[in-house]
Image 1 (tube, rainbow over the protein chains, first blue to last red):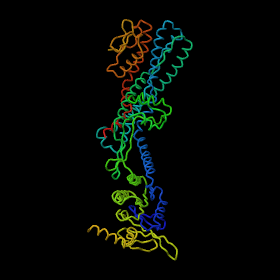
Image 2: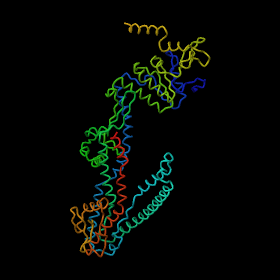
Image 3: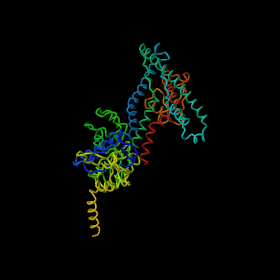
Image 4: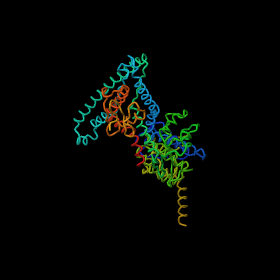
Length: 457
Length: 101
């Protein structure tokens, strides 16, 4: 139990049910609980139900789209980084670079006998130093560091390797990184200097200057394209990328290749035709170049145009939900979303769901969530009120005292014989349940007899 | 077979058909193939530049430049293999995993 209001009113840390007649202050009490909480999930009465089927469907689809968008972003986040790297790969520029190198080299060789004092200088034919990447070395150091510093699996690690040996390995790798970085710095300095001198010599000479090419980068770019194409082919293989079940509903996100340019256009949300680009869809790098050429496509979204991700909510029969099922699904999802909050407040979930659904799904979910956080449900429905398995009952009552209305809350455990108000008044629990949920003892008895009569026919 | 060799005072490169061709005939496609063989081939062997072994001065210029390029690549073979193996690896494995599911 915990105190929710300054007046001393307490609630259970589990499932609380607020009962009461109409205009007795139930929703007011729930609002008051809400006002005391910073991170509450509050599902208001009728908020999930719309009476306009088209509007309902539109809103549901919008909701699904938002969830899908978050899921697509998450699933394709790695591929987005790949695309960011790939847009900088220009095989055609690389090709021209090699061509220029070979052309100028052959021309320079052809003119060797006509060389003057400037072009005869050794630096005139000098090529730039290659600069090695230290990425691998840095990753390696990080990996070794992780093994050294890991506490969770320390015992297993020490069974196979000595930490002292790993430390000396780390030190040697760090020294190597230091040397390589220093060497790269020197090489970069020399490259800059050589470039300047060659340029100065070429100004005074009529001999052709050999244009340099970075063959390492050219070869790696070519490998990069190959790997990119393999990766896209892999992505195009149909797969279920996300699957979840929620009280009988199945949410499924499926990845598959685009069937035509219109599908890509729909995802891209642009007006320009993508038919030309789509002709290259089977050759991912060429397709990427086509997309890059289209100025109406934002670069940041290009990764979404390689595979299609569909998001569906299916019912128990594996068919997409429709009509009332949408409201049911939304309610279940809202309740499930409450897990991100500290408390769940829900006002009359029975507003427009049938008792079967309330009893089978909503009650079970409310009870499960109440294991994790306090839940407060306002209801006057017997299926929710009597069957949910409340840990604590509150009865909101509007009473007239000295000609003026007084709002009281009686509370207690469901097994208590009486419920008590903070100012010392009490009510019989049985009377509360009968009045709030069954419209009084007489109505309940008459209904019960009615059911029995039908049953005995 | 050597990718570049000095022969009878000339510089020569190995073409795609396995024949040696005077180095002045080299084209960009040949250079790319030699670079690829140096980084990925089983062996990346070639005669080092030796001015005295090449009489033709034009051959000297070309051979010196190309052999220097190939030597740099040969020194970075392991680095290239590591870098190539790592390219998009994390993403490849991740998406492969989603298919296996």
